[in-house]
Length: 277
Length: 315
Image (tube, rainbow over all chains, first blue to last red; front, side, top):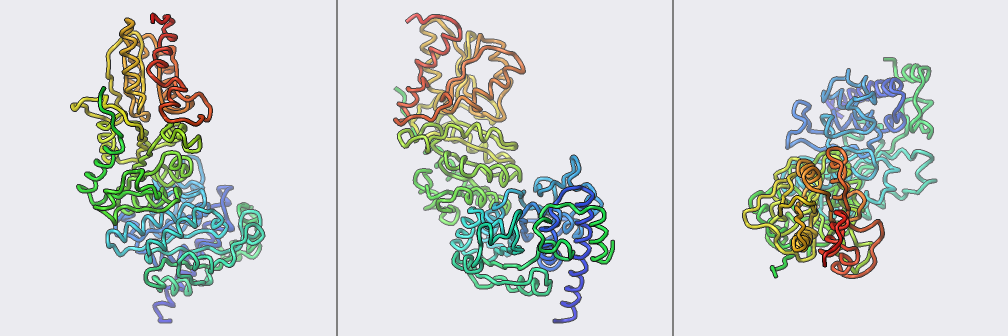
């Protein structure tokens, strides 16, 4: 790895750590949120917004921007923290998270929050919208790319697979789905609920080019995303192996932290593990 | 008798004109290229006809994404599947995200007659009317269909355009100017008002002629735009005439009749009759048969009008 690449990875680690702390403090203050999933996806979001996406907070609707869609909209907290750090709105606004009349809903509102491409919340919507965006780019001969992050439990929604079939039919190699594969859904593991494995083989069977990566390793995420398209003419699936609640020992891989709210004592313990505010 | 025409032809011709003049225009369909009359579009613009296969949720999500990328998508599909299967995508991806997508709902109402209640689409106006940011338009004839499609294209927000399949006569003359959100008074009268849309407008006009022969002057309003509704025309009908009969090819719950009643009770309470499908799954039979079955014909409209006026038939 070059010095510049090492510097970027080091910066991403720092940014992710700060994002974790901000996210947990925000959920603690709001009394609502999805801490486990936020901490699972936050390294992916940081890598995208600070190392991959061609976006400009000054011009959030620029036609040539890359499109990013957080299909697992319940992890809006992680998205807001990342968008604020990237300059799409003031970090001070994070204090309004889920407060009355705040534009920072529990699920992202595209008509109000700069940088949010489409409103999400009900699962299984984001990939089809991403297919439409990537298809629009292809029709126009444009070079911008489309990235969609889905949860893994979300893949139980049939609409995801409608979109997956269309993406390969239309040969959308500018489209990348990143699966936040933390193995847990609201009440249990995915495998004990409705099993997803063999997940990579399923995506391949739908015509996608698949790679797998440690979803908390910024260097590995950067390297994988730099390799898009993995194969010309095929959409890209990056299965990011993650842990719900990653970074806080008492939250990690614990199903109850799907939407448990950290108490003040929990928050102090978590912040201490993450190096303090 | 006036010539009867299928509004889908006017729709297809207008969509092609829009596509020729604006290369952002794309059509998105769910395998029903033929029944949505997109064959010509596909021949002329093969790359801009996007057939997603039998996948309505995907169809609407993809259309929202195409709009995000700068395209102007016209989603063309049978109303029963477009609305019922993809309602959450209509709500979230299109309306809540406020994407300019034109939802062209084919064969609404009882158009699929004998195919049965699975294919009847008598809830579509109620469902779409309940979603914020969405215009809801039910044109009456080919002239209005063409103009409504252009009006939807000019909007900066999404529109649900419900098209009929049953051949209808032109109820407007060539000078007609459709304006989204504005009703058209097609016949003057002060004793009562008939408010209809879609295929029921021609039948309301026939009923008004029948009432006139009995000495009753009925106003006839074409309320093509159900949302945003023209509350001025509704209020005028309620204050200036003796009652209102609404007529729609739709369940009586939540459609045109409800929309009119919502205005009437707030502005000028007046007795109404709401004609439509009375809260049942319709039996089998042709569209024509089913409309007769539910009294959605000139005679049924006349009877409702007379009952409303408490005037016995002079026949």
